[in-house]
Image (cartoon, rainbow, N blue to C red; front, side):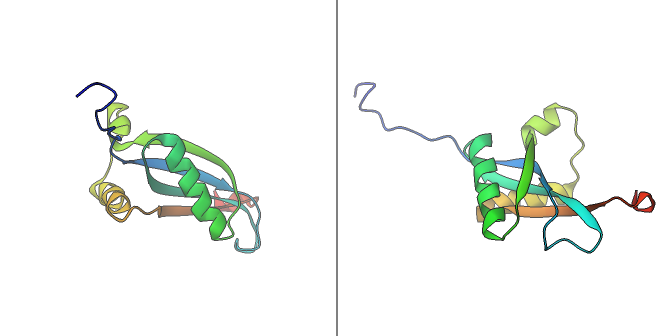
Length: 115
């Protein structure tokens, strides 16, 4: 078998931790100026995880403004992040179900009492 005849292998999917910023939309609570969603998205690489997550959010009529990736579980652990078991379970679920999992949502307001 030559190098060209070998079957191509694809890397395994990994789960990426993403923070998605949302602007003002009709779906936000009264007084909210935006929101942040912490989610877990599987992908072959970071770019595909971001694309898939944004696509899912747009299908739900959510309009992402910005996406920040914090990397895979291994990358986060290597950076010194402390990952609680519940978070690891959500990551495993995202991978097993090949689904984007929203772990947390935070509404932003201009009210200083909400800080």
